[in-house]
View 1 (cartoon, rainbow, N blue to C red):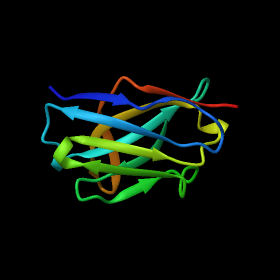
View 2 (spheres, rainbow, N blue to C red):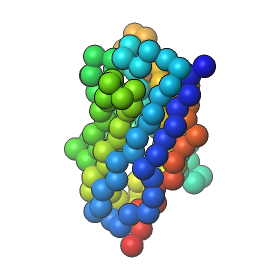
View 3 (cartoon, rainbow, N blue to C red):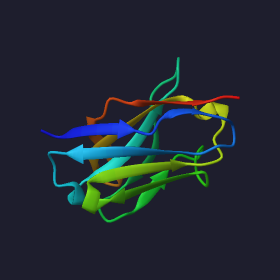
View 4 (cartoon, one colour):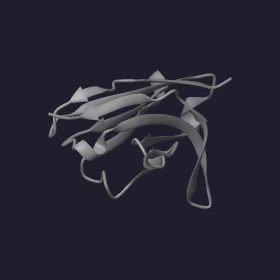
Length: 120
């Protein structure tokens, strides 16, 4: 059974940084893709970034140049480094594992989410 545990969320001032972690167990981490989604109050859940098993990355336009997704296969952990944070980045951030089909990412297993609040 695949399990994901996120950590690293919290309260940060605008312009600040946070790094989210996603520890994965119960799967061969090196062969799976990892994604991060977020959901702000009153809004639909949206894709933030994905990283394939080979390290290829994709980002939502709203976070390009500010967020970096990465993975450490030796630690079975995925990361989301978030810089230059804005109040609009406030949301619950969810890690997931999944796969790519025909160029699109399909999440399969989700973590519990971690709150990120950007406010002065």
